[in-house]
Image (cartoon, rainbow, N blue to C red):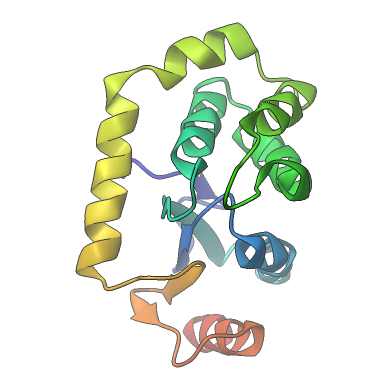
Length: 166
C-alpha cells in the first residue's frame, strides 16, 4: 500500500517490479514496461518496490519518494533514469547528478531534502528490503505479475505473462 503505483488503481493486472534506480537493466526495461502499460491502458498497473542493492540507491530512492510527496514522481523518475549513466557509478556514485536531474524535472530541492530526512522513508525502505528478502528477489529488476514470478528473465517472458493475465 505504501508503494508508488503507475496506471489505473483498479487495473485487473498488476506488475510489481523490484527496482533499483542505479540498475542499468532496470533503466533498460523501463521503456518496455511503459509500452506494456500503453498496450493495455485500462488493464495494467505498475507497482514499484525498491531494491537498494547498489551504493547510493537508498538516497536516490528517498529522492524519488520526496518527489512523490510533491506529485512529481514520474517526471523525477524519468529524469533520474535518463541521467543514470552520469551518477550511477556502482563503486563511487555521484549523487549530485541525480539531484540535478530531479531539480531539472521540477522538484523543489529544499523541500525534497527536508522530506528525505523523514523517518517514514527509512521504514518504507526497510519494508521493501524485508519483502524482497522474503521473496528471494536478489537481482533487479525482479517482476511479479498478479503475484506470479516470471518463468525466466526477459522482455518476452514479461510480455507473455502480462498478456496471459490480461
